[in-house]
Picture 1 (tube, rainbow over the protein chains, first blue to last red):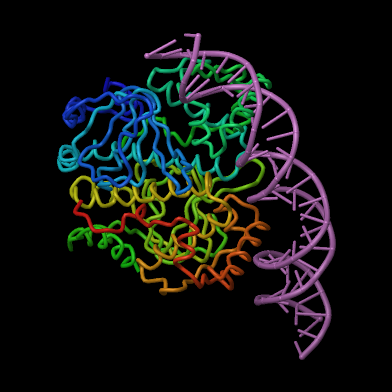
Picture 2: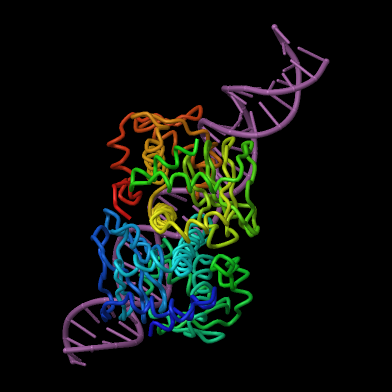
Length: 239
Length: 239
DNA sequence: CGGTAAGTTGACGTGCGTCAAGTCTCGTGG
DNA sequence: CCACGAGACTTGACGCACGTCAACTTACCG
């Protein structure tokens, strides 16, 4: 299932057979985690990075009062903490939002790639830089967009990202996340998320129910969210 | 003045004479920008990255209604858009908050580094990953912290980051930023920033005036902000 | 069929936004 | 030297988007 990751990389640039093999060669094992489990806790020393093969995974940070902020949602094919390769410990935790199948990539082998495969190294670097671009867009949402715009923007972003790995239809996609977890992404309370979802439904823009996002007016939704996928850097580019 | 950048890298890991020379060798020219100027506009094709030698520089994104969100503040010694090396165009703009001296690092020469100097490549990768960690912490502020906590947290963060490059005293540092720009960092209005600054002053925690941040009770401020500098990854680590 | 977690709704509270009217600072030119 | 204007800062009155609290419904699972 590592194909989903390669699919995404190949959208950006050519990945040679040798590079393909090198990426696969970093994987030391594959694990399935149940929904709700914290896979990696903030601060732990790491000697592997987590490649998400299947499921939904969140990066989050805790606050003293028990609140959490989810700072990123990963979909199948994402390297959830490739940045951990250079950082050696994470400033955030990793949560399995749905049941997650993950592959663990050895840092020692990733290091080998940086010693011998400069092009692939640039591709991996690129991929952590796109993650950072997504963080920036979330900052804009959290800082400046209204609750309804934030929700609309997130639904648009995940639609594009899931389409890339073949997990979304043109007008809908599966998203097995609770309203409480959505609230933790959007910097809102679960109660208000519920109200916002109702408004999106009543305005016939999107519907979110039974773990599925269904678009009724995608152009209208994108207009509401001011969604521009440029920050996802999906266009081809020789690195 | 590129020393400030090297100073910061050397806090994390050893930089050899050859690597030192390679970094200096990427610089093609040095430019001074007046305060208020947008140095790089979102979307432009780039063939160089911006190393900030002196001044304060912000990354920001515009919204349709004219509002802006500043997603990151750079201090002297920061590579403001090293991520542009792999992304080739920026999803955000760069603003000179104060007059800024910048050096431009050629992407072609950075590429040479990735071909020949794997350790230095990892160090540069690391430095973009720390930027991403700062983005995450800002997401937590914007999503979950109150206005006064956000301001307190930012003052704490900049204190640490400026100390690293020798630009902060133990109990104060220069910060030539307007309240309106602070508001754009914190996801607030200028009016509310003003009220929050007053409260911080009245509670004898920090004072911000005449372009200087002066701490009156730094431990109390850190407690209020729940500030933990771990996300800045300042401890040494062989990469 | 009972227990538990997720979702829904209404009434009410509040932190921050909005609007508007100041004051203060400083650079410029008469 | 002072007049003036512009931009930054300050403050108060008021409004609203979202939070809080609490009761209820629904879905799911053993």
